[in-house]
Amino acid sequence: MKQEDRFKQAEFAAWLGIGINLILTVLKGVVGVKANSKALIADAVHSASDIAGSFAVYIGLRAAKQPPDDDHPYGHGKAESIAAIIVAVILVIAGLQIGKSALEAFFTPMIAPGGMAIYVVVFSILVKEALFRYKFKLGKKLNSDALIVNAYEHRSDVYSSIAALIGIGLSIIGAKLHINWLIYGDPAAGVIVSLLVLRMAWKLGADAIHNTLDHVLHEEDTIEFQQLILSVPQVKAIDQLHAREHGYYVIIDLKISVDPYMTVEEGHQIGKKVKDQLMSHSHVHNVFVHINPYNPDEKGNH
Image 1 (cartoon, rainbow, N blue to C red):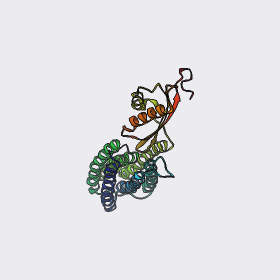
Image 2 (tube, rainbow, N blue to C red; image 1 turned 45 degrees about the horizontal axis):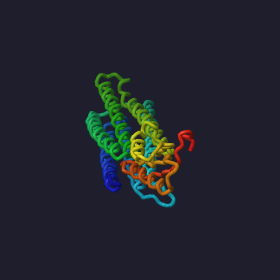
Image 3 (cartoon, rainbow, N blue to C red; image 1 turned 120 degrees about the vertical axis):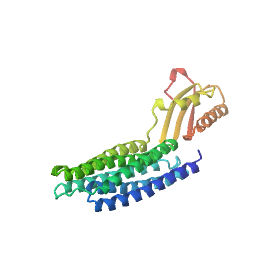
Image 4 (cartoon, one colour; image 1 turned 90 degrees about the vertical axis):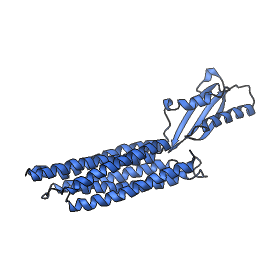
């Protein structure tokens, strides 16, 4: 897939997320205030954080699209992972704010929320689950950390909405049956929502940081690359293979051994064939090949 086509699909997904979250934030916020639901207001804050997250993803995608330059010879692919970290930070802030608001509600007299809150939460669950599935599938297709993280941000909103649904339902039932402690199911759901958001932020942030710190693929993940290299018959051995992830693409640092008695030009042509083979892979952005003279007694010591 061409980089321009990849960006257009990812950009559309980011703007779609922004638009849907904007609608849900307003809807949850207005109904949450009118229905007096702490859980729904907390869920609105979570949806608002999704808007900021989608903007961060969009900015990261635009930065990652830029071609290599003198300061960034390996390209700007890690901008997507940085955007994913920003999304995780936004989720932490939202989670703490949601928890603080919900806990404060336990120290004030509670009135059960109105029934309209139930319909809004159910609508939100259906919409956000559909958005998660769309972005997760697209993120996997485009190998985009930022889109995948953003997809799980939508999934965390689904979980928070389910918690809100249960809390609001318990609170309404408690009011109708005159069970006063059940009325606090609404703010209790708000606390659960905050914990879910914080847990998701920790997981997504840790994964994004791992990918940003020059992570190399494990050997079992490079088997396809090894097969491409060894398909060049003049390659005697693979001495070293480091496939470094740079956001949605991979850069390979490679050492191979060839016949020690061939000419420099012949060795260069073999290196070029190997590079062409690897560059045929859709995720490989660049390859750096070092040629070693083959010596079975010194294997792996070059």
